[in-house]
Length: 400
Image (tube, rainbow, N blue to C red; front, top):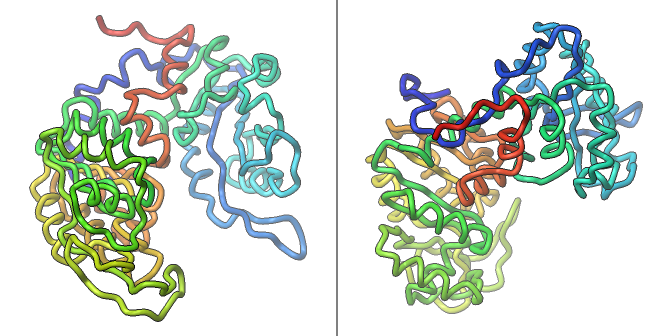
């Protein structure tokens, strides 16, 4: 956790209302607890034996919840998915390597088979929920990254068992809920990424909360086109231009790029790509040229906006940052967010990867573990997994 430690993280947080936490569970001594975790970790094949876990961060991050349950006398079984096995056993997604790693870190914790080996998981089949719960007395959801999914292991157990949010899930709700409650002002949201269609809903939702919306990444070109700019050969979603025009006419403070780093027509881009002229142009891009990053003037203006903020949310890169020629915009925004004295949240995914790569993790107040879940939480104000927990038999009464 970075700066701004002292502020009460539960202040004006509507998401915590009625949400059962670990201390709301009944006496656990001698009881069996099913814990939904997110151990969807990277694996590396090994020629001489089974695959090995290459990054155990998600497993280690679940240890506080698992150890709390063990310390309170419970028998603990963890349940996770791995990859996309399409509802049938698939050797590529066998949990053996994860089971080995969990046995090293938490030897008293059992692990089920890959939840997605059964079609009932993603189909939220009541019969599969019943099978999951056999022998268990309580349930804990500690998997924020899948709490936007109405899957059996996420929304089913609270219908039948005393349930709670684990420490990881609680931290996510405390951090992200501050954005929806009473954020310190000014509240600045920085939104990037490739596809405007993926972000329109959250942009509309954010405009109800923020003082300024900062736009970058490939999605910015559809918004620039809606504003009347020439975008050359840049990616554009023509079907979304009218919606982007409506955003621009909302009367809210929306910042768009004033200069663009563009690549000449036909030249390749991406990891390890070279060749082709790269040029910084204004908000109007020459015909055929492709905009692939925000320019230095835009970085400077975005950094000034971020520096004044009491609260910052950043989700999505500013350009094709895996190509070094188009990484300066993302790096500049990352450094600005890290330098901001306010409460700063990075919404997982590529933004979190950029912050990590630049060594700025310790300078961010909170980094979400679920990019998709964090965006859906902001867009809809709740998640299926949280709503399910509030309906558990042991959930505290909600405030009137």
